[in-house]
Amino acid sequence: MRPLLALADVVERAVSRVSLALAACLLPLLLAATVLDVLRRLLPGALGRIYALKPAQAPLFFALVMLTLGYVYLRDGHVRIDALRHRFPPRVTSAIELVGVLGFLLPLCSVLLWFGTAFALDAWRLGETGDDLPDLPVMWLIKATIPAGALLLALAGAVVAVRAAATLAGRPVQRARPPAGSGP
Image 1 (cartoon, rainbow, N blue to C red):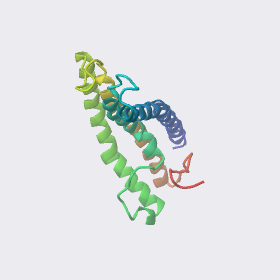
Image 2: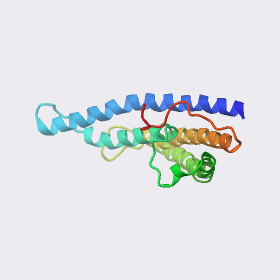
Image 3: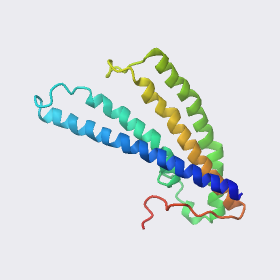
Image 4: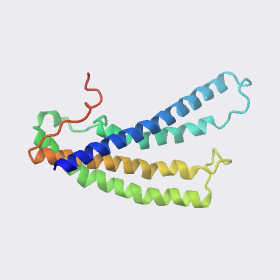
């Protein structure tokens, strides 16, 4: 179990670094597109023909969300529906988490990887453009965030599953970093 836990730590660091690096690139672009779009509307003649900013915001936001889902899951920052979770002992919580990862998360990620990859490859082969950005054949890049995000989320799910299995085996695992919103 110890080698698996060591591998889980390596995978967690890799997913975190990749997700944070992508977010560091996408978030400033999203903010710049939003601010320039607002300025374009407030000062109609000052910014010239910056017309493609509004259509760029949704794909940038989509990419940001898809490519950081794995990081958010690793930090336990996602929305949970289970109101009683905090009352259960760690082994019960780990069992629920393991069933959720193996029964729902990994199958969902597999479907997203399979169909998302085909979706992105088709867009690339066809040189697909968006209705709002007809001059830029980059729909494949936007669509490629589906399988990329699914892969990062699946890797994060594997980390959580290994740690849940370790807890069930009587070897509780402390996280490398505290979950989001848990304080100092």
